Every structure is written in structure tokens, then in C-alpha cells.
Length: 100
Length: 262
Image (cartoon, rainbow over the protein chains, first blue to last red):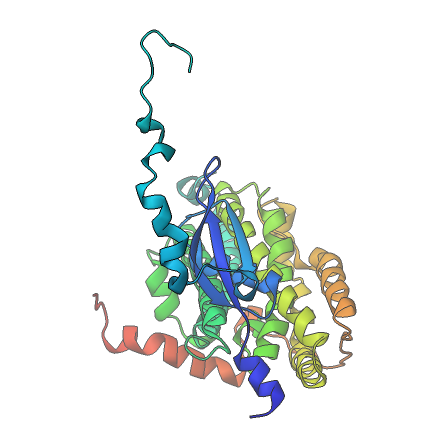
């Protein structure tokens, strides 16, 4: 396979984020292939907002995302498991406090 | 003016409205059929979906226009009758719309010119004195704006891409260019509906359409082809060889099984 063929077959992967409506955050909806960001945006429009699912789209090249590794799951997330004092419900609000 | 009202005006003018609307309908229908041929054959899955979307937009426009043409002519023909039961000589689409798809670059060249044409056309039809036509145009104008953008993006990338993509993009333009002047060809029917504020004389679209196309071609390092050959005849039912094959594929099911539904 020539270099050109390889490039054509390997358009980069883009992650797509769609905001369903004003006031909501953009949420990840999936990914797609496109030669560049502008085309990724247009492909995203065709693939992910066919049924009026969104009012705004972000695309990010997948390679630009630094993600946590499943291998680090234990050290990353488990330590938060027993820190119940991090939840507001841990604290009792004294009677008579109205504007806390 | 509603569809029912339009039937009330003089028969000559309703005949004109029906014939005019049928031209617009046939353009959309025949190109929709061509776009459908790309399904499963596009360079990438994402592009496959994009081309199918564009084809379906055109089909939607064709359905509204055919239905209205049927009402306006008052011969009790619905969209299916008009799409599936007319013969080649009764179709009044532009020759450009029936040209073979060729490669992806040719399809993009055709889409650039035709969607630029539809953009200018529908933008004016929004102000038609015929309310049905104005409403169809109001919906369609946003769709064709997207088609034009899609074609523009690809023409820029292929024209200003590799040596091979540039060569094929220019070749696509050269192939379709003999069919471009027909888009702007005026005749008595066009002039009459334009005078009545119902339709648009395509001659007035030539300037803005070619200005848009030229701008894209320049940016894409492509050149507008020069040709002394101008194919015509589509508007009066004289079509190219490709048209027979296209209609055979489009119509054979409906004709082999009249009235079938599923």
C-alpha cells in the first residue's frame, strides 16, 4: 500500500460532543473519521444530529484527548470511596440556620 | 394562494404553474436518484451518509413539488404517477441532473454548480406570490445551503489537495461544464411565471451562481472550463442516453407491479 493509500484509509478519528439544548453541557455522543476538523464537524452534523439532537457540536481529534487508564482505576478512583465527609449530606445543619 | 385557489385562476396560467413546478420537481427527483446510486459506494462511511442525506433532501423537495404540480395541473395525478408513470420525453429536468455520477470529484463538481443554482433559485422563490411554492422554497433553501457547503468543502480540498485530486477535480468540472449553460436558459414559460411573480427566470441566476462557483474554484486553484458545447433540450423532454437507464432503474418496480404497496 502506498503512503497515499494509507493516508486515505486512515483519516483520523474524531470524538463528537453535542449540546442537546441551551443550558445543558456538551455530552460525548460518539466518534467518526474525517480528514480534518471542518469535515469532522459536518460529518458529525450528518451522523449525530439527524433528528434534531443538538444545537451545538464540538469535535476533538481523539489523539488530542488524554484519558485516564483502566489500569489506574484503583489508585485514581477507589480512594474517594470511603471519604464520606466529602458529601454535603455528611454534615448536619444546626437548627435555625436558614441561609447556609 | 393555496393549491386549491390556484386551480380557480385561468386554465392557461394554472397550466403554466404546473409545468413550471414540474421542471423544479424533475430536477430534484432525477438528481436524488443519482445521489442514491452513491449509497454503499462512497469513499468513506461518513461520506456515504452525507450523500444519502443530500439525496433524501432532494427527494423530499421532489415529493412536495410533484404533489403540487399534480394538484396544479388538475388531472388527478399524484406524486407517484408523476415520478413512475411518465415516459422519458415527459420529464423536463436539466440534463446536468441526469449525467452519470462519474467519480467522486465529478459528483462534487455537479453538486457545487447545481446547489449554487438551487440556493439562488429557492432564495428568490421564498417571495413567490404562489404561497405553496413559497412554503416549499422556505424549507428547501436551508437544505440546499448545506448541499452547497458540502460541495464547496470537497471542491476546496480536492482542488487544492494532491496533484491527483486536483487533476480529477478539474476533469470533473470539464465533464459537467457543457451542461451548465442550460441551467440559465430562459424560455417563454420561465419568463411568464417570472412576470407573474410565481417563478424565477433562470437567466437572472447566471450572475450570482457563477460568481459563487468562480470564487470557490479560484480558492481551490481550479479554473472554470471553457467550452463551446452546450447541451440543451432537457426542459422540453429531450434527454441524454443516460436518462433511459436512470428511468429504467427508478421506474421498473412501480411499472412491473402497478399499485403495489408495502
